[in-house]
Image 1 (spheres, one colour):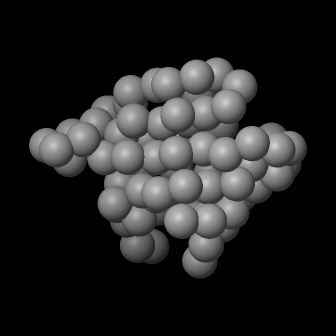
Image 2 (cartoon, rainbow, N blue to C red):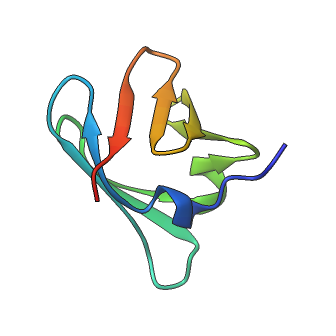
Length: 81
């Protein structure tokens, strides 16, 4: 089991239902800012978003594999930048 770092999620992602998500890590590394096309801009503590070897976003569980994050609701984010 390898821990997910918030820096691994930083960048632009394409949402499988359309739109782009931008993930940035604040200057302290303590928070992740997610700009999502549907739910808007959210700031989440890094250790709540990166939970062990997975991700947690609004209760949805995600798995980072290569350039994709697959969520347990069937949504996939694909890294584009």
